[in-house]
Picture (spheres, rainbow, N blue to C red):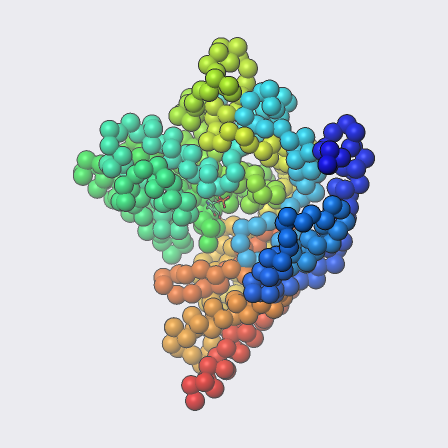
Length: 480
Ligand SMILES: Cc1ncc(COP(=O)(O)O)c(C=O)c1O
């Protein structure tokens, strides 16, 4: 069994085994002609169940053969141009090289004696991101597992900075299009059930700052504490960017912590053409960025950034075995003092490799391309009488709904759209997402693949229309 340990004596086995795995994936990527096979849970679950985990195969080739059946054949492939569903980007090769290196070396980003070099690399990337945001000389931050954890940590700091005697009085303001992790964080942070105040958006799906001002005013009048305003720079459904400068003004006026959830919109930090769309982000107290959404990085790769490094102390606990106080005096850097996690992957290496091979402008070009594609898609949808489209894109999502010429019942239109999404997924020809807008079911394209073309968009719109029409035809037959 020792021959499986990765060490000085097994370097050759490591090379062979990993190469074999990589070759399988490369072959799969080269031949995948659809984003999905359409496999059902019912047909795949028994295949996975049948594997006897107590009877090993003792052979990498055999295990990879088996993996073909349980995973590789039926995985959802985000690199395919007709994967248009969620905020999953195709990944860049330099980052995947970083991934291979980081899992093999296996540094843990808690203390220097587990991550020499890696700690410094992560710190450089935090500083680099902070410079791009413009958070100022005292800024800091830390890599996290994703946007949800970044939001949680930011709100933890905001809660501690709010210095209220009672969590029950604390209020967080977020737009109705903000991410659900804000509500989840409030619960995890022990805030009351009314802690999150939802602020309406306008037709453009951006937070209405007049409404925010009104809510902040009400909060003050009721003797409550405005703990934080969460501005979203790229809402999950619409990509809409809240009016950051106006929100910053209100935060200053009412003494609220300004958190910008730029999990999606952070890609603009590297854009030469569109960076201005998130102007005002530099006024935040904290920012969430998800490199694994719009920097073309593999999951996980995210960070929480803060204007004032000192606020990270709220996440600091000292353990004698790990990060005793004397380490601070000895000026030995560690990241565990800043993080909610202890053992932590060296995810920063992926971004490091990306910047060193492609450069930031390279990432920005790719993100600009998908934003351009969304604008073209918007024009196509707006001109297509079969579809109703909600809002012009600020980033790269499009929310729309098939509207059959002969049907006026909104519930029947809902069912046709739901059916079309399901049928498309089952066919594997394309994958699209869905959401609700003012109580009605809509479909969603999240465009993050620069390889997707307007022809792909057009073809997928035809497929959706075909499935929806099929549903309506069948429901007519059933009704008659
Ligand atoms: C705006 C926004 N914030 C936060 C998140 C959560 O990020 P993660 O899935 O990385 O936890 C998402 C995910 O879609 C998001 O769109």
